[in-house]
Image (cartoon, rainbow, N blue to C red; front, top):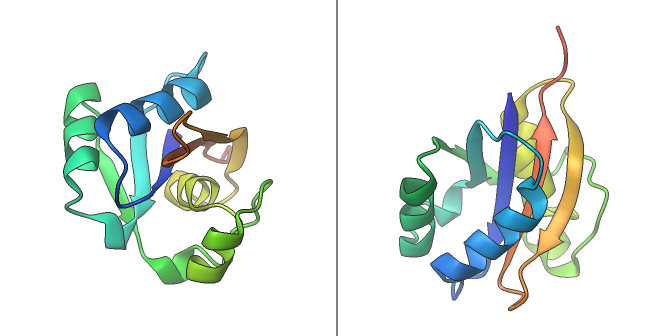
Length: 122
C-alpha cells in the first residue's frame, strides 16, 4: 500500500493540501491518505480527501513519536515528538516495514506538507 501522509496548519486551505500532495505524489499511485488524529474534521482536509476520492486514516499522536523521519520540523518535534507529521503518518499508516519513497514536500504557502510511504514487503 502507498500512503500519502499529510501535515498542515489549522489555517491550511484545500489549495495548500493539493499543492503539497501534488509535489510529493508525482509518479506514485497513492492508495490512501493519513494524518494525525487531532486534525479530524478540518474542513480543507475533508474536502481534499473527497476531491481525490482516497480513504483517510487518522493516526494517534502517540504513534508518531516512534517513527524515524528523514526531515525535521521543530514545530512537529515539539508538538508530536516526531520530525515530520507528514512522514510519520505515512509510515504509520503504511504498516510495519514501511519506507519513505518521497520525503516531506512543503506547499508554496508553507501551510501544508506531504510525504509518501510504501508498505513493507511481506
